[in-house]
Every structure is written in C-alpha cells, then in structure tokens.
Image (tube, rainbow, N blue to C red; front, side, top):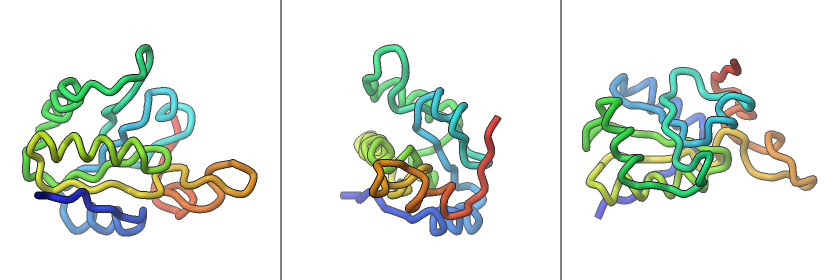
Length: 133
C-alpha cells in the first residue's frame, strides 16, 4: 500500500527543484487562492469550493488528469494548513496515483496562541516563493 508522504515547505520546494516533472497542486478554494496568495508555479485544483463545499472525488481526479498528471507523476499538494491536502492526497492514492505527498503545515500554517495563521509556520511564513494577484 502506498503511503501519503509529508513534507515541510522547504522539503517540498527541494523536491520540486530536484524533479522538474513534479507538480505542486494548490487544493484550496478559489477565494483563498485569490485573496491570500499562492505558491509560485502551482496548479490550482480545489478539493472543496463554493457553492456546495463538498469534495467530489471523480471531479477532482478528472481535473488532475486535465493537467496531464500520470499515475506516477510526483504530486505535492498544499492547502491552508495541511488537512484538505491530506484528504486530497488520500483520494489520489485511492485512484492509483503512486507518488503523492502534501505540505503538512500548508500555505498559511498552524494557528498561533491568538488563533491566527501565518505566524508559526507554513509555506509563506517559511519564505518559500509565493505571489498574490
């Protein structure tokens, strides 16, 4: 059985640089992607989004396929804090993808003592390349 690998942001970026065929897929919703920012050179495929906020595995797999991801493509998933990317990764494994990982602290990271994100860890906090449009 294939296991979902877990990376810290720096390790994920190292993997993406080491394997030019690897892809980083942002599974956050469209509003997060637009208003919070996103990693540079990522593919955007929401796991959950407006209006129903429910995961549709078949639609997710079809969207991944539209980006020419093969079953053995190295795929690294990222969300806000690592939970949705974990669920999306399990879905990919269930559908036969074999080289799947996710960023455990996500784009915004864990909550701090004031219940705010972005101050403890995460892609943006750790200085990985990102942009906001």
